[in-house]
Length: 482
Image 1 (cartoon, one colour):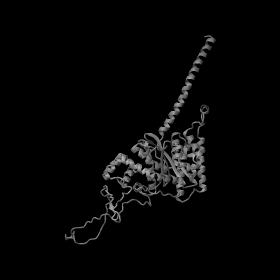
Image 2 (cartoon, rainbow, N blue to C red):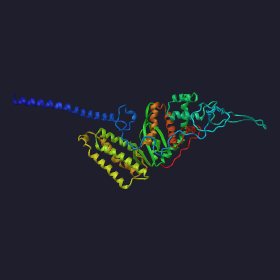
Image 3 (cartoon, rainbow, N blue to C red):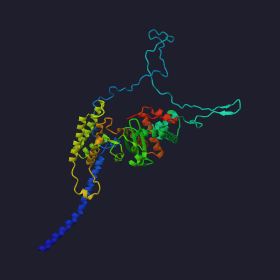
Image 4 (cartoon, rainbow, N blue to C red):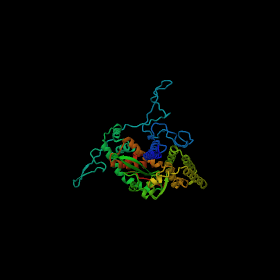
């Protein structure tokens, strides 16, 4: 082979190699994208109730690792000072049943006429026979003896039909449906079995809507009191209204609960509900960005941060995340101890140590992050996508004051559990009854649950509170500084 032929062969081989490289480059990019997508899906599948806000019911049947909650060291059962709920005798029984001996156990003498005395008492607490009490209203016609004009009496405003159910039955029906979240059909079945009354599902829905209408001023009052509070909790969760995704928003304190639903999750809904724009105290919530738009003081839920740290430590194997997880739990325990000592803030020296430890962990976390790939900045516009670990680090750095605020004010809780507890009834309702079938049904649920939750926090009987609603006078809402 001559030199010219060998050169030509080398050129042809070079051309073929370039063509192969041109074909492999797109495949390499596709492979990198596929690997990133697989990693994202694996991280999503690895999330459970310990590492995210997913409910425990979504964990499945697999045995999960132990939770991060630390043992309290207390024995199981009621603690010292707990009042207990042992069944006790009533002072004035409704009925007394005597048990006398008929004859003497020694000589068989007749004792029926001999007076005795109580040697021992026992009581059985039971329900009477439950039945409807028929109360008839009659108006009388009276003829005036002077002018001979006949005058008629008048029925009370609440007695508007020839035959109707009274407020106590209405309250019981709405309590079972909205308070205990029985579906409409099962509520009607329960009332038929308990009271022998046959009501339709439509009647039950009308009673719920009537209660919601009468509670509108009370719920508005609850919203005003939350606006004036020093501390409120906020959260949101998804619901279905006529089969479409909507959001249930909660604003609450230890003594007040306000629920409202909206098609939007974010700021549009919060503005329309109207509590966050007027609130000037401290708001406790998660890291949802819409809350940051409001000009109040903010605190971040520590339980959410603990779960995020567990996720980064397990999925990305970063040591700093485990250290931050332990730091947050230690912080919670320490603040609880200082509260038991009736202090309003952590002493200055200890506070400075906690703050220094917090930022030392963040510095170690930033040092452990790999540098971004050199081609990423040139191939994308706008903010570059970051790892879960880097996002958490940035959030902990930017929100350091919100995380550590309880060091300076021990009245601030560590978690947003108050809001999550007040939202939990909505998830129970979804599991039992599914979707809301109408907007009026969703509104009735929000108003009645807001009222019932508030009354429960303030120590009222829920059934008595609903009875007051059907008498036309809902119980007043009490309020004091948080």
